[in-house]
Image 1: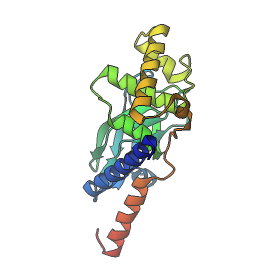
Image 2: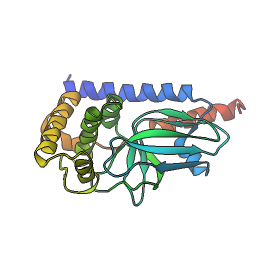
Image 3: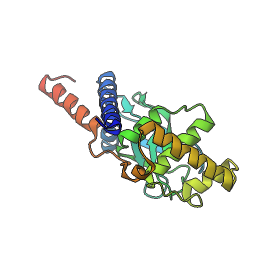
Length: 228
């Protein structure tokens, strides 16, 4: 069997198992999307353009805990879309901070902007995120560049949007950012076992929201057995 096919199968299995595991752990927790649509959640971007990773504050005004999962896309109409870089449980009537990577390539982040939970990133992007080291600036920058390479179809413009802001914030020269991009591309090819020409074929978001399916199943069980 083709090694790329095997890798993709493994990534899907990891994505599925991690989703089941998180859902079991958060059996009494509400999903981010459900809490938001019920009007019990507020997600606010706290950091300025060029920050890697960004930090968002999640405020849960509901009566149940909320579970944030890594790979969750946080959408904004006028600011930068983000993707959660870690999983965290936010208790009822409390706030918590979540680190997140930029998801777009041509938009700039605006502090104080409100974000909405949307779909999930693809298994490939989630694999990259879950293998990043959030305590290392070098590693988070590498991870961010890999995400941008995928989202842009390997056609990243370093002179616009959040990419340009990152270059300015870290005082990176044009030669250095191009070197880092080459390193990120090579790391991506090795990690996903693909060729450079196959980068454009990688999807940036997931067509199936496994978290929603699992949460829906849990909700059905609760209703069927009158679990409150």
